[in-house]
Image 1 (cartoon, rainbow, N blue to C red):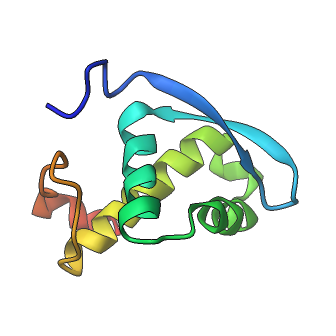
Image 2: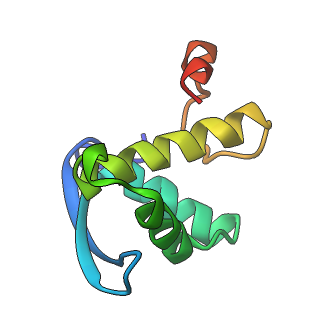
Image 3: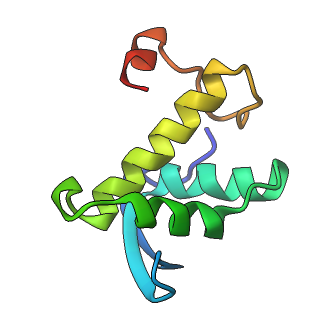
Length: 101
């Protein structure tokens, strides 16, 4: 098991939003761990990920927390669909989940 603590505990981190302001985003520990992995191992621009996703978020889309958590899930599913690597502690996506993306 990768986590010594609850992987679904919501943690807050500061990120830069689409307007260049610092914002706290609360997401499950597993979502943060996945983003950390993407940045470290795959060289993804996680800061840019937050900015880009915040710029397309509408007020009607809900909170920045829920929107970003959904964006992480969508990024994971898109990578899975393309057969790209995932962390060893991350299980394969269920093919039923691909309907959402």
